[in-house]
Image 1 (cartoon, one colour):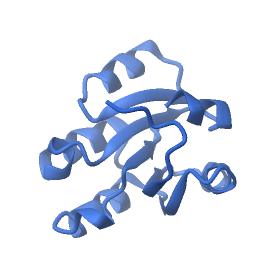
Image 2: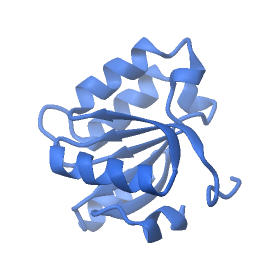
Image 3: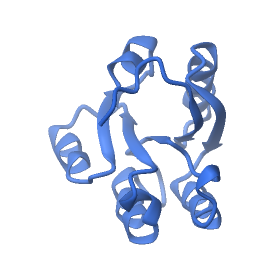
Image 4: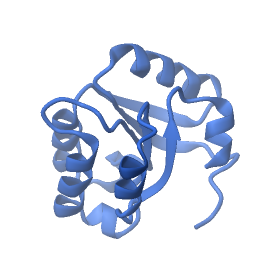
Length: 134
């Protein structure tokens, strides 16, 4: 896969149930001009609905999804499973996922890496250094 460093993405999605993290992460992405557009969802269900709604319009799909693991109703692992079920864009490698979590649990990390769409696992908070590791 080509390096992501020094690239400005068209659309990045943040999926986290914590509004404070969403605010901070959005600001970091904006300040570092990481993406032209940022789509924020406070639930995995809302993010999946957005993706399903835009499956036929690849330009509206995110290049990268920053995904939290520990969320109510639909956690990050369940989100990944459902994403792979619905999304041809994942098969075409359009949507890459970066797990962005406060969890340091080795099981969470191993389970996340089982999905072909997951390209990295970063512990919160998101930083410029973490963006550069992509």
